[in-house]
Image (tube, rainbow, N blue to C red; front, side):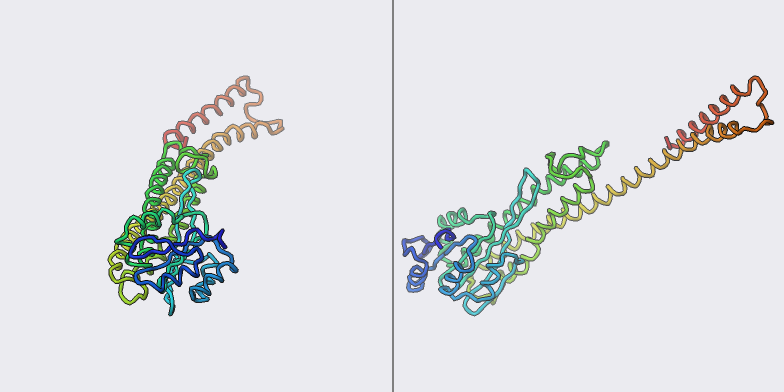
Length: 341
């Protein structure tokens, strides 16, 4: 069990205090003192390991099942003895231009907060250390932890959206470059995408959709936390959740803008491909027309008839060759003038 416990600490009046190493004893101590709560952090617990925590803290079975399955949308669930929030932290790999999501479940109840993290993204060590330097925030109880965690995740959303915007601008420049860009390189100039430009755009769009699945559904939970009537949420914390919700709205606007721009780039690229295909067809048709003339004349004079015009004429062969060259040259000038060649 110790392997999955990242940290277990008691906070009294906004300050971390020494307490029992066992989380059960620590919870008892936290509940026996005023203005005190326990923060238990877990990382990918097994069902057997988490059953000990759920039975001790009195967590609802449905919330426990969601916390273990680790394939949940961001949401807020209210139970009799606890509040259950699912968040999806997002990480960005600049080397591969890949967006990946993890999952973070937060349980808030009587004098406790339990965080369950799945995946390697968004560790909470920095959030905990930052909170421990702000006792005026921590003294608001478990709500302060939920706010700090949500604020950190949403701030990461905005940063990642900015990085994606930079990569998208590079991809856009490559798509509309005169030579079509370096087809073998990714949006940020790295070997990250297949050689097809359309595949580059589609892969980038998939990254944005993965990002959107984390940011979009979180709007409803943050709106509820910023409003009235949510138990286990400190009244003075509601303005802070409104601030998080404003930042989330900004992140969602950035994601929507990225998605729209990607759709426009894809449409423009397909239109470019259509124009190029038409140009290619015109060129092929022009060369086929020019090749048809000597083929036709040579085919006629290649027929083995005894009585044909010019067969006995001394200048017949040079005249036919000159005729073919003249007609082909005339067609070439016409096609060139019309822009087909």
